[in-house]
Amino acid sequence: MVDRRKAKMLKWGLFGGILLINISVYCIFTPAHMDVSPTFVRLNKIWERVEKCIFLIVDLGLNVYFLHLVRSRLIANGFTKYNALFRFNVCMVVVSVLMDSLLIGMLSLPNQYE
Image (cartoon, rainbow, N blue to C red; front, top):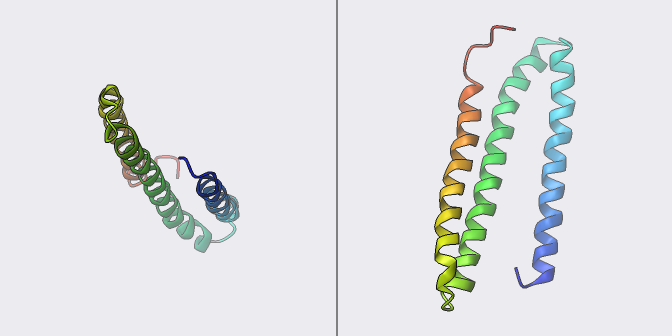
């Protein structure tokens, strides 16, 4: 990213957003696993899925933005040697999103320890 101001805003915005999500997970996860109330247990099951979905969206958004920058700034300007890098990164984005999706799906599997 060429614009340092934009990069700084993206970096600090993501930091703040992920920090808030992690704080909320801590505030819900701890009481849920200490069996404070059934409400916290239900809320934790829901929030875990929501949190993972938010992370999937952030991951996908950052990866798509990176791919856009590579294609629009490098490949479009004649740097054809970056085509292989672009194709490899597209494959890695697909793998990353599939892994995030599998993680969300695995939350629905029965848990023998509950």
